[in-house]
Amino acid sequence: MDEVFKAINDPSRRLLLDTLFEKDGQTLGELTEQLPEMTRYGVMNHLRVLEDAKLITTLRQGRSKLHYLNPVPIRLIHDRWINKYAELRVGAIADIKSRVEGGGQRMGAPDHIYKAYINGSQAEVWDAITNPDKTVQYFYGTRIDAELEPGGKMNYLYGHNGEVASTGNIISIDPPNKLEFTFQAMWDEQMVAEGPAREVWALVEVNGMVELTIELYDAPAGSKTYDDFTNGFPYIVSGLKSLVETGTPLPAPY
Image 1 (tube, rainbow, N blue to C red):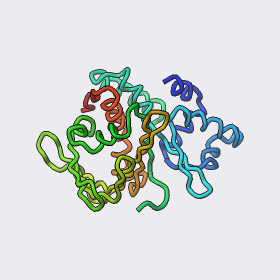
Image 2 (tube, rainbow, N blue to C red; image 1 turned 120 degrees about the vertical axis):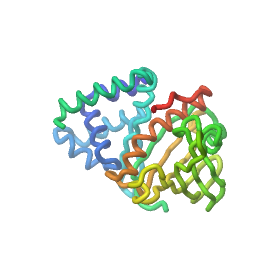
Image 3 (cartoon, rainbow, N blue to C red; image 1 turned 60 degrees about the horizontal axis):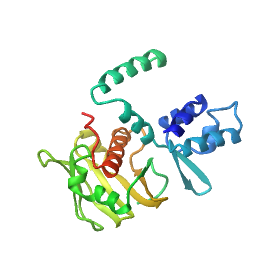
Image 4 (cartoon, rainbow, N blue to C red; image 1 turned 30 degrees about the horizontal axis):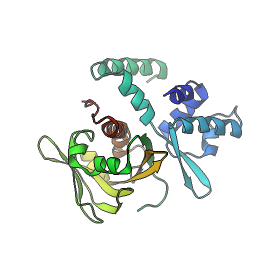
């Protein structure tokens, strides 16, 4: 966690994170505009520090390099020092502070990217993603109900009553490397009206760990789907990581 604290200790780097929070998938040129007093090379150095700390992730799109916020490391800090009983108090205090200080098919780039490093094997992470007895422990209490083949169903059912939380279909699958599927949330009428999003979960072994990358498509910034996904994924990914590494899920956030 030392790299994370070092990265967010600089106000320019915090501004870059804030900028990506407002609009994900920006180029170096767009981010440089947020720091007009700094050279392009200086901004590149700041982005390198953020990437080394896993606070951002990047994707090549033609000649451009797009930068995405990766909030998982910050979520892990949150989970380490803020227990479920203190969370409501901390959230209320943070909200007051914010109000006082602030005044109130795989084409194109993904709408959002998450990346995490998990100390386990690809087989273990894949099992945690596709095993209903595992997903119920970190995926907001839902059990995956899937036919693991192209065109197969890809649903999540609430563990306590079996009701459908989301529906979808598998677009492509390459165990234990990649799973691409549509995801239609059923818990919110506005999200149903917006239509299904598309997710790509990719697993790669890196230095004895698994690099998990989740790409979100068809959920433009500002949509209810985008907001729910970007707020919910840090808990899901952190819970998955905890389950694989320790055998113990995180406390439920509700």
